[in-house]
Image 1: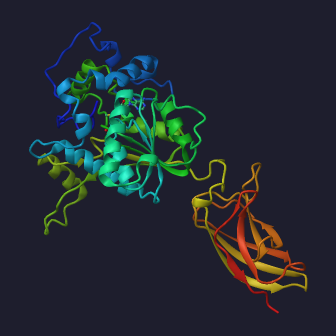
Image 2: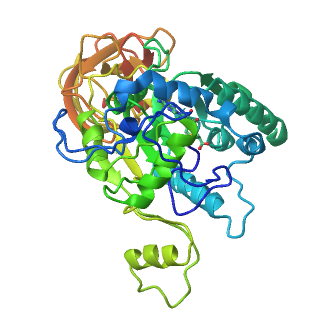
Image 3: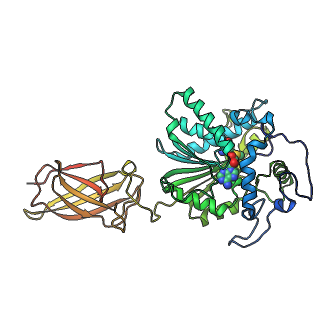
Length: 440
Ligand SMILES: C[S@@+](CC[C@H](N)C(=O)[O-])C[C@H]1O[C@@H](n2cnc3c(N)ncnc32)[C@H](O)[C@@H]1O
């Protein structure tokens, strides 16, 4: 359950005591039928091997209860490891490097804005949550096991004290599977990133999990999956390790083929689905010509961390920016750049402005729409309750995009000084302002 990503290294938490095989249901409640590897069934539009244990959603309750009970079923000598993860004192510190490198690489890749909102799915006892908090992010920690949440609370409390950081109010724990998350969460649709660290292969109903992740994200938000083994159908070493774990704890161990992972994410509406190699280390001067693939296999041969895409599904994907979501309703994420390309008096009462407007924020600007919050340009008197004239955008503008607008503003009633500003209708004025001097 804990260190499911790289089966070549046994973890400090997982001590295998030899194989136990039985055709009967064993103590964990998992049958041989439950563990049967998936076959090529085209029930969802994808033909080919999907997950190590297919159609696990049919046994949702059983796998969920096993996840809930996991900490209580841990042998007493392993329980303190809930607080020690990711530290691995054995020579080489294999699982320490595996876990640290994977999460650090992913955080770097995501390149999130300061104080971003992250959903940590399957947060467990919270060591990744702790990292996020230390980096200044806000975290929603989703975890079905009450025992894990309690351990995470304790851990984070200690961390807050030790670090002297105001982390306590920046984390919210939700005791739920990702699949069963309540519909009415106020931050639904606002998360900058949803991350599954060593968790995605535990998800019981992958389609629902992906739908939830999609809905939790803001437009343009990122999904990250890491610490997840890639299922290689026919690989007996993988199968033995995962079956062993399921025998022991009854938890679902069901990694994905790369092809099915890509299918599930794309079918769930995500775009830019990218898979990664993850390698870290010192490279001797003189070795610059070695290619990435060589480094991956060198590192594997040396027993060092090599998260090659052959063995791991390390994935990012993006929720499209244009998704019909409520739009510029968040001033903190909405910003503009305004340039006056031309200012042409038409008469005493009218001026024609040619403006270039660039969406430098993270929200989509709708030219108009059914909800309030669409974006217009205002030419306004620079004083409280000053009069104004407005112009509509010619089209919707996504983050990073520029539009040019030519508009005749009626200025008969307006007194200088004047400024140009964008407004999210009935919501707020944008921060940025450009002073406008009208030609005499
Ligand atoms: C291997 S642990 C990883 C925990 C944590 N991310 C870490 O790195 O320490 C997997 C976690 O996923 C949780 N989990 C299992 N099924 C889940 C589901 N359907 N939805 C959300 N979390 C789940 C488990 O309870 C467990 O805490």
